Image 1: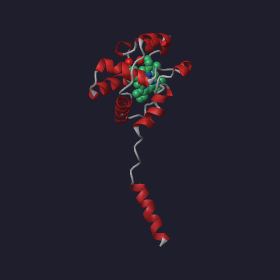
Image 2: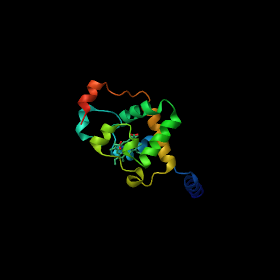
Image 3: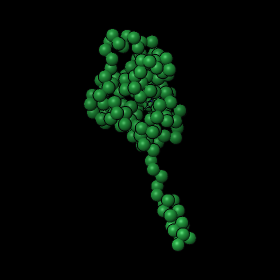
Image 4: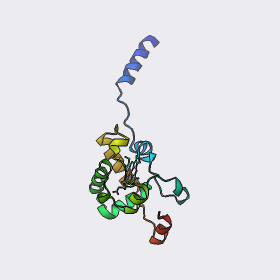
Length: 140
Ligand code: HEC
């Protein structure tokens, strides 16, 4: 019996498609190499890029609540960052311009990048920018 079941099981395992990586896992592995998810003033000195909740809040001020507009803008930026496109001039000033994602993580597909951008849209929907006074303490 065992002689029969084992080949059957392995055939089954081999035909199940590999589970696609979840958007948050892609964020953690790729984007998370530079971006913290949340603003954390205690870890300010460790930051090499702005926290993603703050970037999402900035973006939303520009794009409004529309998912498609937000996602398209994120994709356009991360594939070809440019100072003129950046929503937060202070972030560019402090950290320098983001490298094109194709340079740092060339293996990420368009579909994966789109999934991450949608995940950012959903995950930081309620993120608020700090008040101008608090922001002052965050300044470079
Ligand atoms: C090598 C470091 C690095 C990696 C990896 C990285 N980023 Fe960035 N990113 C930055 C820096 C630095 C900035 C701030 C300067 C700027 O706006 O270019 C930034 C800015 C941004 C912004 C603000 C865009 C805007 O419109 O102003 C978004 C959104 C963003 N990153 C998303 C992502 C996502 C999503 C990923 C992963 C798929 C990612 N980043 C990976 C360094 C990185």
